[in-house]
Length: 248
Image 1 (cartoon, rainbow, N blue to C red):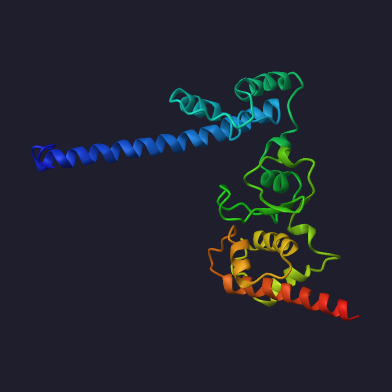
Image 2: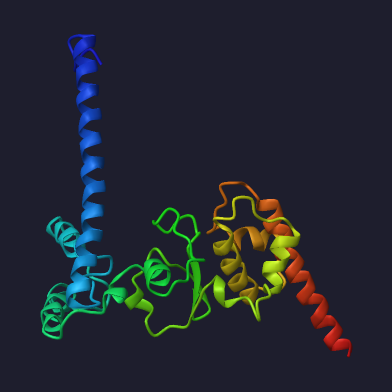
């Protein structure tokens, strides 16, 4: 490195500058991500359920930079004019129709908890990582923190409250109790909802299937052994019931 820097001090100064620059870039990126979420929420609450571009309000700006550098991000089969300008025109058209009900412009998790009183859906990371907020929409597992209520207003939403019958826990909920599959319990509702949808998709999973199929839920207390036992017990119960039905 002697041909680039005359002294060791100059090398350290250069490294420090690079570190500071990297910190600034990461900080600005984090701020822009936060800012985008705030702006999108404001636009949707004021003018309706339209998000410009596939990933948010600021996506066209990012795509414009890519296009400037000869990389066309327009989705295949989509006209460039429609991709960039039609969403903006739609926003203007929607603004004339008035604002959405405030609960529809909120996160699905917030709408469930604050407006419907379904507090069994918990908020953890709020970034679609931990799975504590998992609910079932039209039979599929979704993170309630990662979508707006307006996005699923016509869907059938099932929360942890929907599983009990006449005040009695569902068989899967009871299996979690029997296997002592919780400690603090904060993630349990998300695990139960995810496991409910998982068993509907794969009624007789192997241990490897279970690990892959439930990898979207995290337990900070580390009760994975009990969770695994509960889900496998449910799958074995269903398998035995099907065999008995065939014999009968």
